[in-house]
Length: 451
Image (cartoon, rainbow, N blue to C red; front, side, top):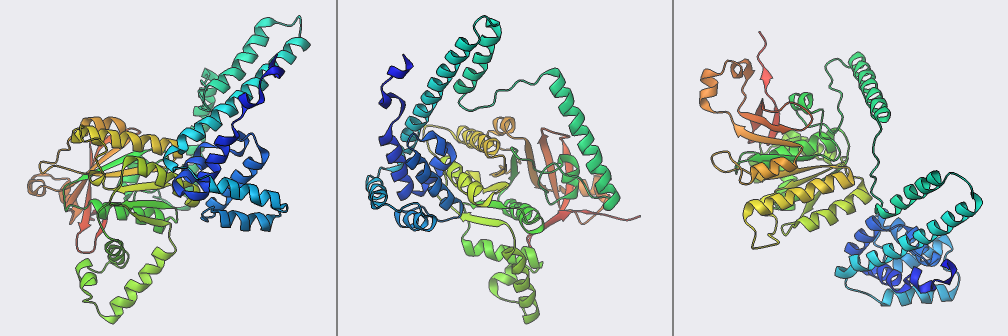
C-alpha cells in the first residue's frame, strides 16, 4: 500500500528550487536556510549538493551568488555537463522575495519528515513480519520511540533517569574539583570559570563567568557607563581572551566606537584623543594599542534600525561565520517598536524573551544594555528579571556610603557599585565596588587598601 503513494506526495521540487533561488539572491534567505535546513532535507540529490555548496561558501564569508557557485563548482569538478549549468541558471532566475523564505523552507521540511515517516512505516512492517510471535509490548515500545523522534520536530525531550542525573552530578563535581586543583597549583588566586570572563575578578567569583545560554541585563542611567561597561566586557573576552564577540551598536558611529577603543586600550583620556591633543609619544602608544584590537575577536555591527527579529538573523550569521560566544546589544531602548499598540514595558519584555531564546538556541551569552530611570528603577524590571539569568546595575556610590559604610572605606577610590540584582546560579544582592574612569573609559575592581 505504501508503494502506491504518489511520488509527488513525498517531495516538492518547486519549493526546493525556490529556496535555492532565494539563497542565491538574498543573504537573509541564506541565513534562514543555513540554520533551518540540512542537505538531507532535499529530495533531489543535486539540490542537496547545491545547498551544501552554497552553505560552504557562506561559512567562508563568500556570498553564494550564481557567479560564485559556478566558480566553486568548476573548481570542485561538479559542473562538467552543460545541462548542469543551464539547470543552475534556471533556478537562479526564479527568484522569490526572501520574506516568503520560511514558508518554502517549511514545505521542504514537511516533505522531508513525511519521507522519514514512510521509511518508519516500512521498517516497522518489516520488523513485524520478521518478529512474528515476539513480545508485542517490546515491538510497540520500540516503534513508539522512533515515532516520538519524528514528531518532536528535532527537539530533544530526553528525560533523565535517577541514575543518569546522579552520574551527571558526580562527573560535574569531579571535573570542577580537578579543574580548581589544577588552576590553584599553577596560578594561585585565578578563578576557574564556567563561562566567559566578566572583566571583574569579584564578579567572576560570584557568577563563574557569562555562560552559554545566559541572558545578562546591565542597567545604568544615561551617561553612567553603559557603553563603557559593554566595551570593558568586550575587551575581557575578545581582546584579552581572544574569543569572538559581536557588538550591536544602535547609537554611536563607527568612528566613535573606534576612538573609545583607543582610550580603553591606551589609558589616555578620551577627550584628548577626540580633539587630537596628544604628543608623539602618546600617538605611538595609541597606535600600538590598536594592534591588540586588530588581533582580537571583536566584531562591531552598527545598526540604528535594530529590531528583535534582526538580532536573530545577525546573530545566526555571526555564529555560523565567526563562531561568536557572546553578543552585546547597546542598547535595547533604541530598538524599533514593532507594535505601536504595546506599552514600553511590554516591548522590553518581548525583546528580552527573544534574546533569551536566542542565547539558548545558539548556545551563546547575550548581554542587553537597558536604561534606568533617574531614581534607579527600570520600567518592566520584574518581567525582564524573570527572563534573565543575571541582572546587573551600575550606579554611582552615594555620598553617605563614604561616610557611614565601613566596608566601602576599605577600598581605594571606588566611585560606582556593580550591583547583582539577580543571579540564577549563585548569590544575588551583592554590591561590588568598582572604579570607573570616565575620561579614560576604563573600569576595574576597586583596590582594597592594604593595612
